[in-house]
Image (cartoon, rainbow, N blue to C red; front, side, top):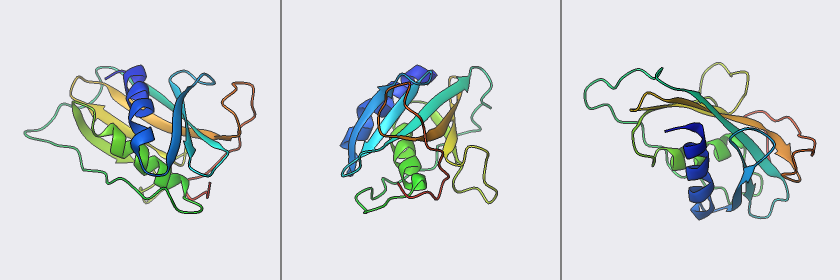
Length: 151
């Protein structure tokens, strides 16, 4: 699965998640998407990047860990909760082998929230939060966020 295919899958699947108002392609970054939650004016902006033919092959009947759909209807959901919603949608894609969530690691990553997703076709995709903004206009300034940031 290529970065654009994962981005498009997330844009189509996320609006059915309770608490997600909209998910749209974000032109501010290659393979970018914005997620807006119910009752929130800000967009959480994400970027999908990747490399082909680098994901380790599956060993036996390897299956990805299931990611539950989180409750995004809370007054102030955290960025890690939005990350979980994206991954719950991502694991529905065909060929997912494994998922590594950044917000659940014992040592935080540089991007704070996101994941590495390996696919059976050899693609290793990286889903990274970029920030929040009030508009998906590429010229709009982004606010930096961390995994525990309330939105």
